[in-house]
Image (cartoon, rainbow, N blue to C red; front, side, top):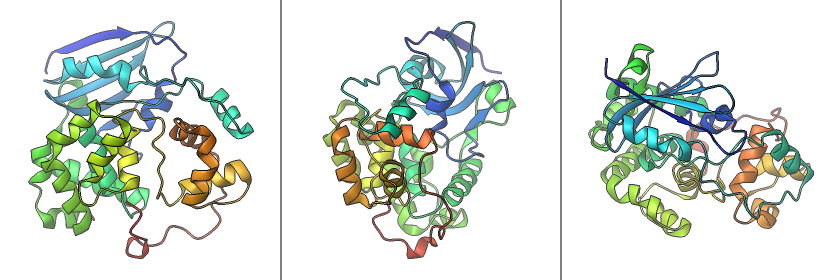
Length: 308
């Protein structure tokens, strides 16, 4: 078993680890993620230095004990504070709706994460285009099991996996994507993204607008996909998931009692400029949204192309 490394970190606020990290998980059976009954969280992470297992546990007081294995252990331990929202700045955020204020109070320990790993967020987001969450999770899980690798150290013992490298994603044959339930348009976008991984990882050093522009320069990466990456990998508190099948309707219902479309959502969130994703994230944690009694999401082939 590879040697483990550790660090202790104490956040300056009452951090809710599960709330922050939970947003990085692609479905309940994400093979790169494990949440133990005692609250310990495990992640299999592909870092710039290689594969790593990360284990996050609470220690006495409000400290976080992070343990890592593998070639990427040092990198991933250094990234823990940012991953848990240490760079998130809520300055200027004001709750203009009672529902937002209540969610902010209930989830005061949530922050917008910044993993610093663009491709890690981008590939699952591309896979999730135009399909249900369950379909995306199943496709991702299949591909990880076929082309990923067991997480190093204790993570591998616990059944944890690490996603392929950029080269690994790029080399997956088209028919294997299809076998995993990913159509040609999405697989082509994923392969193009993997081929441009070097330039895409540089988004960390760009402004919000420039990062969005660089991401959307990849054919097949649209408004929704870019936002999913920016609020996960780049820690952008303003990256709203426009184009999502549910987000506009749910936020509209939560704040006004009526569904809205993307244009309505733009208007509704205008007072929160700079923190619009913060509103989305808080309301999602609070379970706010319209009742799910209507028709379910249509089959992928019937969805508009803007869902990407």
